Length: 253
Image (cartoon, rainbow, N blue to C red; front, side, top):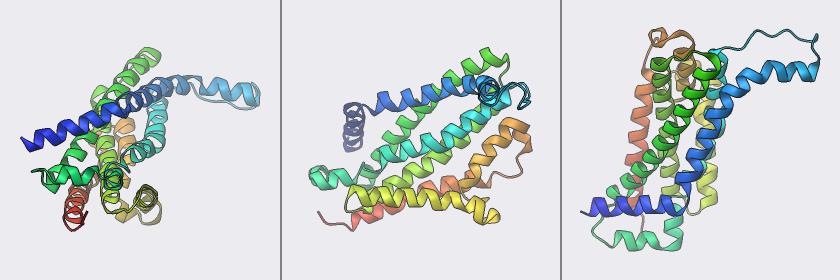
């Protein structure tokens, strides 16, 4: 019963903070603008540089995919980190965490409820954005690769949830929101830097998932050489959650 109570509390917090409106709206906006921008980009460039200055190929569905992935792997991931990095530390600072933990609620249930509520928020947001993107892309380009797109979005979901679980961990161990924000963005940067610094290491980290999304959408699922980035992402999510639970157990309030 305590598991349900704490989970209901988390969903109430999401509704009170308007995250369930703002985040899906951001994903939907990106879903609408990505195919439109892909279609209009050659005309925009020609209007800026002059009709004879540059010759660009006719945009296709691949350009729409690339535009979406660029927006989601950069802007939207950072937005999700921003929305997650305060979920624990704020409750420590305002004293509500003490009230929650004095009830028959374990620290594991508390952390897992945070994770599940954020997972739900990501699923709703990603689902809404992906559905709108699929519709507009199929209308504009008269083609859409549904199977490959679903696989690519699954990889993106794993990629995002890695950073969400990381933000929960840093929010758990941080004394204030500022430290949590700094650690979350440093962690995000370091993980993604592996793809530039050490390609072999990156292949076993979530950093490679963003490139695998592109591979799936441009060449198909069977072009993937390995699923190691997906496996490592699942392991990393579990590690961050376990560390969050353990660190909370050793904290005194």
